Length: 111
Image 1 (tube, rainbow, N blue to C red):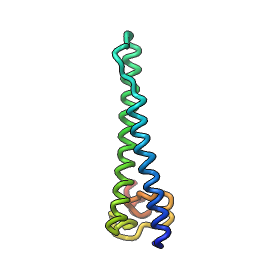
Image 2 (image 1 turned 135 degrees about the vertical axis):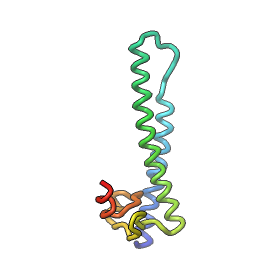
Image 3 (image 1 turned 180 degrees about the horizontal axis):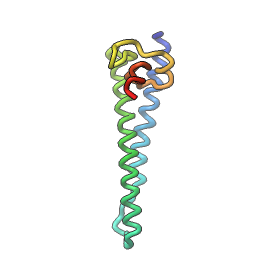
């Protein structure tokens, strides 16, 4: 992988990391579970909202972990190497999914 492509991917990853961190903070701010509920419908709505929030938070946390792992791999020089087979991850795949830990073939095997 060329140095300029690597820098471009690193910039993409850092930008994505920042967006995910902001998204997690926004989730925290948007939750409102006050004691002012006086109807079972309101309590049910809040419980449903909380369940949705937890699911979304889990997804965003996983994405953030993948991004941070990819950035760590860049620092130690193992970025772009498939975790399953050890082959180089295809350039077009990294451009589409910079935090991908697997090459195309291994991704297909995992599905």
